[in-house]
Image 1 (cartoon, rainbow, N blue to C red):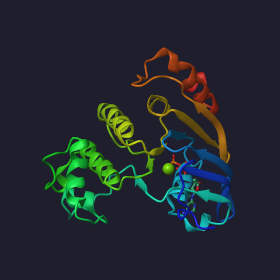
Image 2: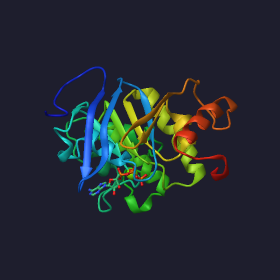
Image 3: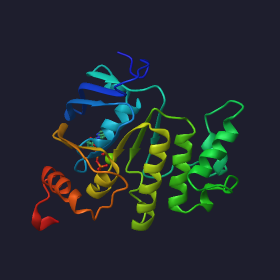
Length: 244
Ligand SMILES: Nc1ncnc2c1ncn2[C@@H]1O[C@H](COP(=O)(O)OP(=O)(O)OP(=O)(O)O)[C@@H](O)[C@H]1O
Ligand SMILES: [Mg+2]
């Protein structure tokens, strides 16, 4: 089986019985999952439940998972991590363009930087950016590849609360404009219900809960009608009243 070679329209992602073990310890235990093209999905789960392992498999970064089940993902996939992973010795625009080519690449890079609010910072060094700006540059770098699937592993985890809220708005806006499928790993239930239209909980190596969040956007975490979703997700995560 060769993941990422099959050109497909929908579903964008299909996993069937995907399994991954490390040293005889099973982390993913037959995961079944389909993500339709253009859907915004969040993935929750305890620390160590296998969220990053699942994301790495979908990204095609884990060669050992091949053959463990069915794994189909689009060809153009971008990944954003908790830290921006910008190369410190390369200017912001060149970081965004890294690995891309073509005549219009520079123009697209500038446009992507403008989209994330970094117009004018093309020639800055990564070390001159704030944490939030660096994550914006990382988003621009993923956008420039025009991904069919955007994978994000706790991309806002290291940001302060206010910057995080701004980044939520930005990510949702970018999604509305470009409509990639999104798989956003987070441990923040509020982030998941504010941003995603479907929230999954990874539990004992499988998708234990698959919840559609049927509320219009933009959402606010204070919306009482999101409360019911929050309760269900917290219960699935085993967070009881006294731990909240
Ligand atoms: N390369 C590896 N070698 C050995 N064990 C690994 C490796 N990668 C992950 N694991 C183990 O697999 C389990 C799941 O790890 P993973 O990083 O996917 O968790 P996670 O859900 O992303 O957790 P967190 O919320 O803390 O980021 C952990 O117990 C981890 O130790
Ligand atoms: Mg992780």
